[in-house]
Length: 264
Image (tube, rainbow, N blue to C red; front, side, top):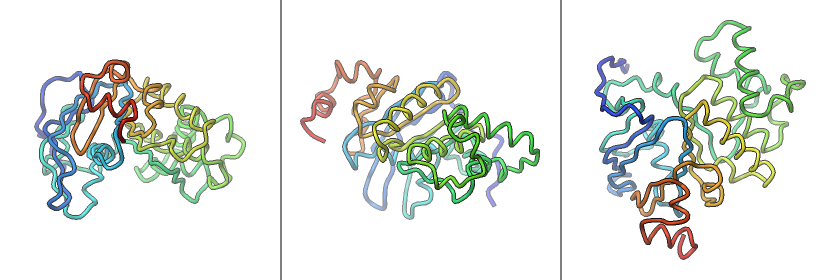
């Protein structure tokens, strides 16, 4: 059994919520990430862009240690949340993951009621109070801009919701356990334009309460919703800056070539 380490190493500079320092990742002998270093400020939206296979989703999963589940993965360097190195040997991964919410590309509601989908994390964390669960579910659905659409149907199956509603339900489920970070891996790529616009508005609103990192293939989406943008190519972080600068005056030719459609 993994024991919780109460003496984890920290790095100074408390203004950053998430950091990586010289992070490299290997699938067997193949290097997928090459010494990636990044600092992400709290209560901002950061977008990861780049062509397919460039490492952006792999890097995103480093922040909740989902790559641990893949056989033959080796990780070197550091990843920090609130200045704690999450790859320290004795860190309690279960406790750590409570700080990190994850939303995937395709909506993945459980085959339960709308209410029980949102309450799921609370229940497995041991919450017994019916009033706390009720209040938290309602608040999470309001934060995810879904409450008005489902408040009269909370005990109907989540599978009956539209794709866009299901994705907002998954966001509500993620934020119900009060994480401090929300990771999103192309959360709107499977949705229609109207649902996509709702998700984008929601992301913009949620950054008041959460630090959000989003992987997207949609550069217009990155330009609309993010404060800073990171461009990845072939496992390297090529450029990371304010979004306006990335899209209007990038420092690297590779970034310019990608955002103007010359490759990717």
